[in-house]
Amino acid sequence: MYPRLVIDRQKIKENTALLAEKAARMHIDLYTVSKVYCGIPAIVQASIDGGAKAVADSRLENFEKMGAINCDKVLLRLPMQSEVDRVIALCDISLNSEIETIKMLNQAAGKMSKKHRVILMIDLGDLREGILKSDVDETVKAIMGMEHIVLEGIGVNLTCYGGVIPGPENLGELASIAEKIEREYGIALNVVSGGNSSSLSLIDNGKMPTKINNLRLGEAIVLGRETAYGNTIIGAHEDAFVLEAEIIELKMKDSMPTGEIGVDAFGNKPNFVDKGKMLRAIAAIGRQDINPEGLTPLDERIEIIGASSDHMIMDLTKTGSSYQVGQIVQFRLDYGAMLKACTSEYIHKIII
Ligand SMILES: *Cc1c(COP(=O)(O)O)cnc(C)c1O
Image (cartoon, rainbow, N blue to C red; front, side):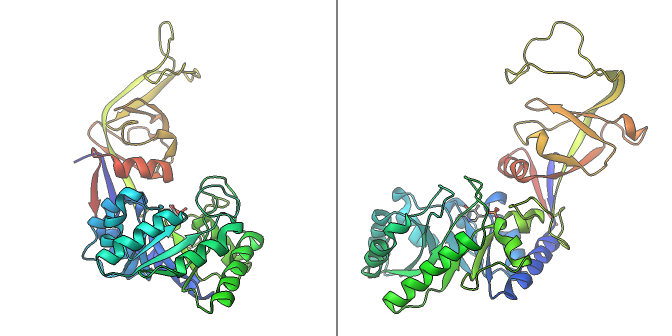
């Protein structure tokens, strides 16, 4: 059945192993981030088998599917106060920045006679989640006083929202905050988490502060790409996920529409370049499932022209007579297209 996303477990395992070995040389361990593929348990398991220490996701629904996976479950998105009981039931560790929420986690953990581990997030300039540096002392003190909460460590998130790139300055700051907490409270933090796939280049260029001992990697494992500069990771598979769509129409047609041009299905006024007649294919997939800008055809002779909700139009002129109606076209996906493809219920997920 098409469209479908073909997911190769062996490639996920190998990507994880490549990155886990690279990180281990700097005494860094990895959380494998499964949110982009909605926590599909077989993929999580492949990544754990490849050497990830734990699985991290932002949605509790995804953890509900992972009961059989034997590793720590880490909630990446700050817990909603309305879900604290489920956080305690489903997760071992959560990332946090609100003391009132942590108090509620403490109560919920108490009720279930559990200990819950917390990674305190610190905002070092990206302006997504995290407490201010000036609030670290007070917050740590409050957490230390909670009976059912363990301070597992501290962490930072960069690049996701503000586009701030990790470097020796901001991660150095995280490292010194960790050292200060350890000195003042006479404790050892298990985790000093230096960010996501955008932090990988610091391992390669030797600028990762030694105190950082954890990264949370999604895109790097899934797409084989670091995200500070968008470079591909040497030796990693970029095609662990391949999208396949079926051609439902294939005809020589004009490249310019005929008639008065109004707006398209999304209210935009389209622009066209007259390339004369072209071999145009329609694939049965659309904006409801992907964004066409995020797809790259594996056959380099194919060019994506655009898409409406359920139809994607491609220029197959350069392919000659290679394709027919009923045949399949394959694509690599960027992060945005992956997100949509994984959440679209119309795209079948095939795990090989
Ligand atoms: C999504 C997310 C990650 C993983 O990001 P990638 O760029 O996919 O590696 C890490 N940490 C947090 C808090 C996240 O929300």
